[in-house]
Amino acid sequence: MNVGKLEARNAIRLLCYKWHARSHSGELAPDFRLFVDWLNASGYAHYLEFESETSACQDARTWFSDEFKRA
Image (cartoon, rainbow, N blue to C red; front, side, top):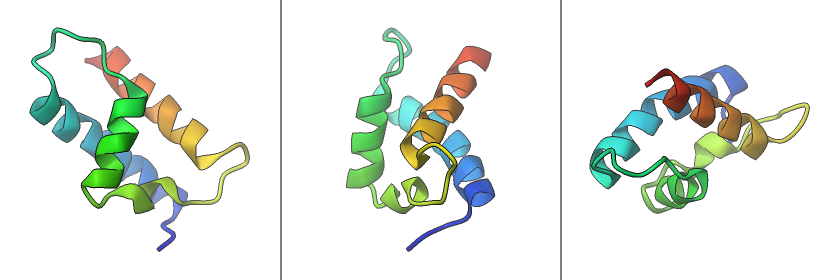
């Protein structure tokens, strides 16, 4: 199931916090690879399937990094 880039961006940004709250006590720097593993295991992998000028995974990594820079 492909989603649009805007929908994926919004979902990834929200899921960053859901994942971090469930997976970390805040002591460790967030790891994108672990986040992707969690997305796959939790049924959210479709948010990594959208058209991108670079790659969907790279866009998701950028959004992930942006969210945790803000925190």
